[in-house]
Amino acid sequence: MRSVQITHLSEGFDRVQLVDVEPPTPGPGQVRVKMLLSPVNPSDLNFIRGDYRQALEHLVWNRGRPHPVFDPEGRLPYPELPYALGGEGVGVVEACGSGWLARRLKGRRVAVAGGPPHGTWQDYCVVDARKALPVPDQLSDEQAAMFIVNPLSAYVMLTRVLRVKRGGWLLQSAAASSLGKIVIRLAEQLGVNTINLVRSKESADQLLAMGARHVLVGEGEGLSDQVAEITGGKGADYAMDAVGGGLAGAMVQCLGLGGHMVLFGTLANHPITLPSRDLMMPVARLTGFFALNWLGQQHPLQMLMILRELKRLQLEGIFEAPVERLFALEEVVAALEMASTKGRQGKVLLNIGQR
Image (cartoon, rainbow, N blue to C red; front, side, top):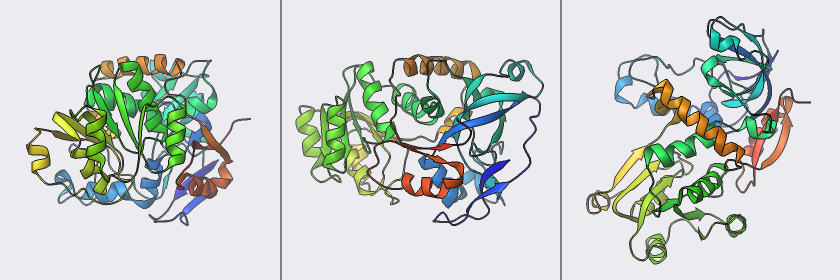
């Protein structure tokens, strides 16, 4: 079968290869999914460059370890090269291992939470049955392929990490991204006001057209004055940052008394410059969010409740995401190059087995 893999970490895409490998066999509690579509997400680029590995090596629990792990218990090791890329997608379960949960999925269309070393950019992907979620018939393959990473992250950060309250003010960077648009729609349903930061007038016009009320263009200059004017001098109750660098520091200065900001991306690839008193004086909080480790800390029943809520919201169109273009699996490098360009209006998808 075809499999998109890398043999060495690289800043570019020269190490991304389409290779032929044997189809995987599902073990106990696993299913084999015939993949249809899979998106290109920022996390996929991180696995190509090795950003996650580099970050893990700095963590205290990896001191002295020859190979970094995502969790202190070592249950989630960073994958060994070579590994297959792709973090999510949609497909049909065509084989299963032992276990009631795996068997009940056979023949069903599912959204898959994958990731290296057993990525979704392959003809067939083997995953734990708990990471294969049946999707409603009303949902298109395109939307089902993007059902997990952005919707789950947006929902969890708003409702479980920030615990937003109706009437509050939420400031977010990279608001024109697929996740940012989800946050705007979800916040509106939750009764939360959003202030959305973008880099261009084109992106601002797009957000205004979809109903966003407050959209600011720029890199953070004069941001606190603008937020103060919008919020009547109160400041933001919550903030979400996917950029880092100087913009993140400027956003911290916009937090009101008891404000809470979550960091979940590093698009600027620069560290935050943050005077300690910018947090001390407003008694504000900074929280990091990495979906893989957050999910690993949750009870299965809690996750079941969250997934049920995600399905309901998906059918209401809250997580609807535009698609920029579909690429054949053989065109993966071109897909990666498009996914890396700024100013895209939608997601880049790989067409693996969809007719």
